[in-house]
Amino acid sequence: MRVCAAKTWQSSNANDPLALPSAVKRLAAMVAMSDVGMVCAAWYLKNIVPRIEPALYRWSGGRMTSLPITPVVFLETLGARTGEPRVAPLTYFIDGDDVILIASNHGRAHNPA
Image (cartoon, rainbow, N blue to C red):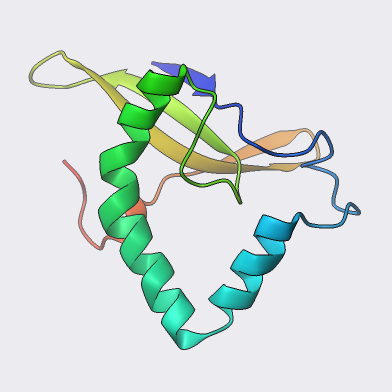
């Protein structure tokens, strides 16, 4: 298993809690405050991101992501039955010296296996 950090379009102070959020993050926060925005974001995360993120990762060499408002790492594993390489995008944040990975199957209720 290997974890590769994506180089997202974030400023150098992306993990500074006192830094002002970027224009993209401010816009995303405004949209997320509405019911329609949350429904659209949930649909995007469940239906679009799982399909394009691995291809975008391979195409850009890990430099681009479809989620510019949050840092993303890519977990590379081998399939249990086929042994084929798989890439799973995970959101993360930093809490002091700890890195917290969020693996949620894109908000779906069932286990992906």
